Image (tube, rainbow, N blue to C red):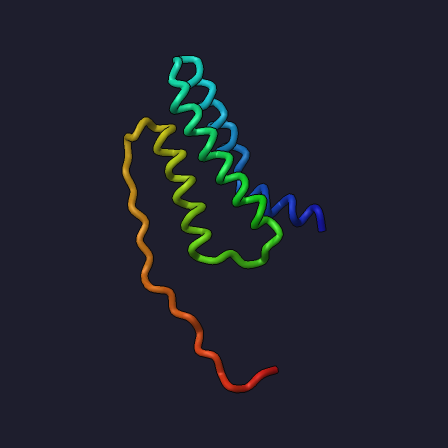
Length: 103
């Protein structure tokens, strides 16, 4: 079971992404852009926390996945010095109709 949890967590937090993020924080600190480094660390912490909290879940709500995607894109935007912009749009969520019968 622990192996499955580890694989799930690894798939959510790609080691290459983590390595690049830490290199970016180090770079920002080295060129004395401490506020941006702090922002970067804060976004990373939120994303890691979200991933850890949902690692044991078999399903993730769409709004939670959108929050996770937004955090990831904010991090990448910081990493690439605002060289891109993004917008996340989603249509209205449809809830399945409940039938009168129960199992």
